[in-house]
Length: 144
Image (cartoon, rainbow, N blue to C red; front, side):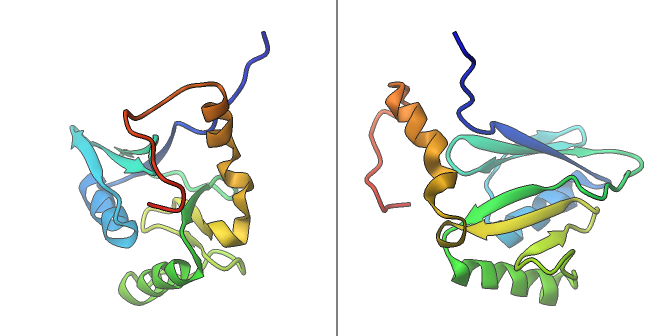
């Protein structure tokens, strides 16, 4: 049987202060913190993914590594950009619409469903076709 990947389960970033990083991501993206302690924090990304934030003594910046977050639409991207630039004084990492480095150097890009197309949602359709259910009650289309 061939292996079938259904999506990404989690992403891990390194920071020098896990609590401050959790506050940053909670403030900018409204992420729900799942748990934390001993230099680590976990936060919910979407329905079935999470981000782990680990504290390290020394950061090692990278040129290419990054992760992408999806928001609903261009209005939300504009809101994120405004907060990152005005409140956190961050500068875009490239000419892309919403491509930044957090205060610890972790690069992230923000896209939206209309911009990136529904191709990004295909793994969830594949999971549904396989008969795997994550909740007791199905979600209605178009609701968040």
